[in-house]
Image (tube, rainbow, N blue to C red):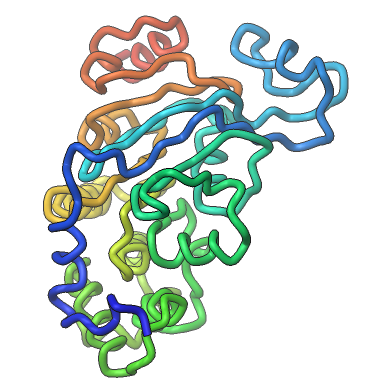
Length: 300
C-alpha cells in the first residue's frame, strides 16, 4: 500500500506541503515539441509566428508546439495565453501524458529529484507520475470525469490508481476533498451528470488533488461558466494555491483569469512562445506585437 494511503485524511496534503521548498522548481520544461504528421526538414523554417501558420507548406505537418521552455516553482502559478490553435493546450496534454511529444524534456521535483526526463520514461513510470505527482482539470468535464459514476467515485478512481485499498479511508478522503470544493457529502454519491458546469469543475479539481500532486494543470477551467460561477471556482483555486503549496499551470483565453491567478505568463502564437515574463509586465507593458494585440482587444 502507498505510504500516503496510511496517513490520516487531514494529514495527506500537509505532510507533502511541509517538505516542499517554495524556492524549489516543481516543474521544468525545455524545448518541448509536438507535431501531427511525419514532419520534414523544412517544418521549423516554414512555421511559426513569422509565417502566421503552424502548418508546414512542404509536407502538411502541423507543428502544434516547438521550442517551448519554462519552469514553475512550488506554490507558484504560470499562465499560458494565446489564440485557438496556438499550442497552449497541447503543452498541457504532453505534460500529462495524453499526447506523446516529438522532442524536449520535462522534469518534476517529485520524480528522481528532477534529474530524469519524463518524456523518455517508461509507460509504467508515466502512469505512476500521472497518478501520484500530477493532476489535470480539463475544459470539458467529459474529458476529466466519468459522468456515469458518482462524484465520490471519480475521486476514488484516482485513489485506487495510487494504491489506496481501504474503502473507509477512500470514502473519507473523497468526502473531505469534495467538501473543500463546497460540494456537500450528501451529494458525493450523485453522478456529475446531475451537477451544474461549475460543480463539475469542482469535482474535477477534487479529483486532481486526490493524491497530493506537486503540479496541477488547468485547461480553460472557467470557459463556458457564468460569471458568478467563475468567481467561485477561481476563489477556490486561489485558496488552494495559498494553502496546498501546489505548482499550477493555467491555460486560459481570459486575461482576467490570468491576472488573478498567475505570477508569470507565457504568450503563444502558431505553436511558439513569443513573450514571457511577470504577468503584470506582460499585461501592462507588452513588447511583442501579438501580445499588444491581445491586450488591446481586451481593453478596447
